[in-house]
Length: 236
Image (cartoon, rainbow, N blue to C red):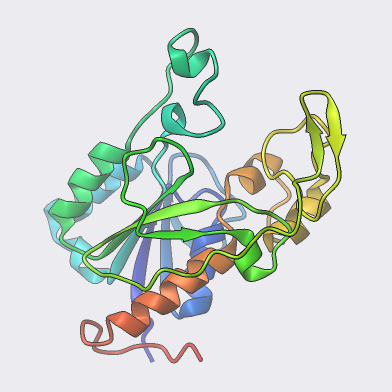
């Protein structure tokens, strides 16, 4: 059977894409950086330019859904409150608005992901590593365009994120999947915690969405939109 096709914009290492693939999608990625370990067909280039090209040519109609994780560092929890977010340092990108504009032009169901912070997206779904028994907390919010899903119940955390905070060391069941100092996990620890085995690049691991998130969303979409997809892969 033919798998429905998903466009994975700003795909990074393919954490979300792998989850969607497990749910039953064929995945095409787009990223401006070279991603040699990306597990699926990938176009290297500007994600928004590529989406605009697909819309102009009509090739966007090949896709059943678009997943996108646009850069929004100036609204991210890790930068809000720092000197840079106050305008005292480098400029951070915020591509949420331009990405949404193009997604609405495309007319397809979409998912837009952002970390906790001030990014201007609807928090239709919030997922956390504890929901999937992962070794990271990694809260992520998702705006759903053109479809809906029942919100998943957020489970209480079992403890702290291990590592140093303001010079004090803490132990806990989760690793800190960001940065590289302050008692941060090793690459193998990050891989196990995130459920990602195909890349050993720290930057890619710390930026990735755990595949479990993409799989959950992908299955929710296929369950909700069976009327819109004529031939579906049996993901059971």
